[in-house]
Length: 390
Image (cartoon, rainbow, N blue to C red; front, side, top):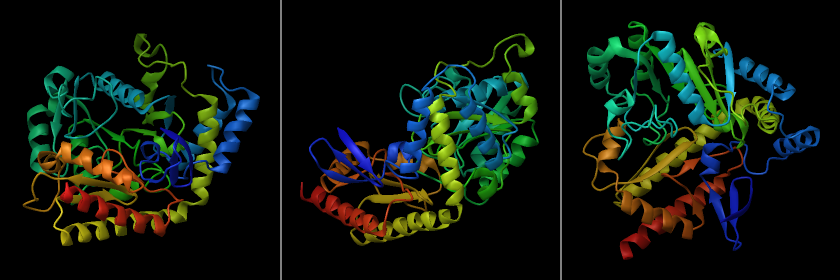
């Protein structure tokens, strides 16, 4: 059990210190206990911690987000990412009058029934969820899905960098190709930027880094620095259907904790701080890229059955059942070789070495240091050696 955190480190109730890679599900890009964000939350508590109706911090935060992400012509707030992706899909179905939704194998878009298909048991039956899957970076797989189901697809939802599927970025302009192919068929494209938004750059990654401009997008995590947040928004004509009473019904919910003033206040502080640090993203991403390069070189020298994947500050380490027979490109490749049992044992050894990661590893913050990188590599080396001795 965690007792407290500071910067890129956490401490448990027994006083043990860990380098934190999980960083609250990738949310704390500014680190634990950031003084500016903390002050913003405390100041808002003194003025009223919740109202359940439109509030002044909500308007200010919306204006900040719109300035940072011009694609958000209109937006709405929720309390979770899962709600935001659910509502984005609901609007896409209403707008196109189609039911089917496409997504990548291994793509995690929250625990809502609209998007949990093709993850693992019991969520493997695509038909039950009115969903169909393709393999990220596999144009043949995407083309086949569009050929067979294009007329029925309301939308394709995708993370610019696949999160739960191993931190796999788009290769060979795959995301731009996906945008072209969906647009030519009047299929809406939803970018799930709940992980990548404000993490890889100031604003969104799909359009600015990978050349794909979506119709709708979702945000969360880093955009509010660890406070409960979901955002969905995009084209004005689609978002018009989110207005209560549009087309004769309420198609999205309000939510008891949506636009929570504490989250809005934290979000304002986070976005302002990240704007000040916008030129530091390059350093942070290079730190992550360098870490993975050194990690994989070390693992190869040790002949260890693990691989480091990711993009920029997003990092994964996966324990494999056997070696890759060709360069890693798709989530399906990684999923077929992923050894769940050994992965759990490996992460337990990492904790004993003072390294805390989850679901592979996690993400760097602006507060992590080169010393943290060195200690992490040393800890991984020790964990591998201990597993060999067992």
